[in-house]
Image (cartoon, rainbow, N blue to C red; front, top):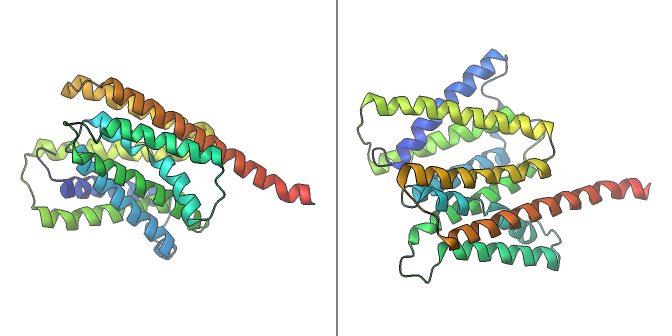
Length: 268
């Protein structure tokens, strides 16, 4: 972000991912564009992804990577809250308590009453909010739309949104070596998408989801080794609370779904 603006990053990264997706789908003899992907919920999900990416990268340009990454993982807390408010799901006192504790972890990291508090923390929090909306929207995406098409829709919507935003910000200039970084970045992100899809199909979501929080540890290590960012005790405490709250919310949601799936059999 010292060389490129956020819109450029979104556009260039998205362009590489779109090319990779298109080549892979052509290789598998799958249609690159499908009318089904224009379903309103699929497009709405991609729009939420666009807003989340824009908010996260903006926050990442202003905050230590560990802080931005940790606050971005507050999405399960928002998801539980929005599921109750928007979907009318029954949230018992125990889940409300976990939600409140999770937001306590967010407050520890942001520390809004400190003199050194940065208003930029609002961006990864907004990112977590839109990620939760994205996860709610996927419930309404038709099951006959393949996962690859859903991911590809996300890629080109984020690319177009970033391109439009880059026109507003102005297009920065850089040497060829900087653009070559985007080739590696696009490849790494595609591998991330691919491994996440494979893992989701091989294992249960309740088992896989907690492993995503390893990204927080990696972000702390990267922040220290590359930028010299040293995590504070309050940051570590807040991150621990967010991780534990997120794992509890994901595991309890799995139990609720399992009970709901058994109810028809019990009725029979």
